[in-house]
Image 1 (cartoon, rainbow, N blue to C red):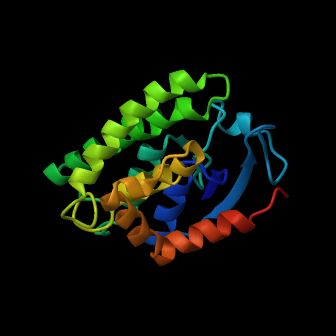
Image 2 (cartoon, rainbow, N blue to C red):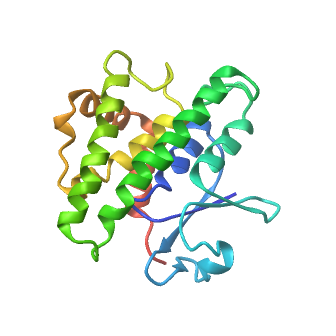
Length: 203
C-alpha cells in the first residue's frame, strides 16, 4: 500500500489513520508544482485529478478523496476505534461530519490559498469560515472529540485546521478548538505522521 502525500495538505488525515490502525504502507512525497513523485513518477498518471491524497492498493487500484480513503482504511480493520461499523446510525453521523469538514472547512479554506483572489474578497470567505468555526467550537465545548473517542473525522478536521495560521486566523479565538488541536497533537500517531512528512525528502 502506498500513500502519496504532500506536506501540510489534507493527505495528513489518511496518514494519521494508517498509523492509528497500524497498517503497513509506503509514504511517497509529491511535488505539487511539478506533479512528480519522489520516486520519479508522473503523479498525474497515478491520479489524473492532480492532487493528494492518493492511496495505491497492493493490487494496483488507486483510491482518491480523503473521506473515502479513511473509511476504506478503517473498514480493513474490523472493530477498530476510529469508525463505527457500516450500516449503523453512528456511521451515518461520521459521514455527516466528514462531509461537513470537506465542504465547509476544507472547501471554505480553498479560496484563501489563491493568491489571485483580492484580500477584500477573501475577507468575505473568512467571515463564512468563521461561522463554521463557531459551530465547531460549540460542538466541542463539552466533549473531547467529534464522536466520543478520537476518530476519522478528528484526523481530517485536525489536518485542515492546521492551515489557519497561513491565513492569519488565530485558533485561540476559539478556545475549544485550540484545546482540541492541542489534545490531538499529543497523539503518537499524529506526532509520527508530522515528523515522517517533514523528513521524507523529494528523492
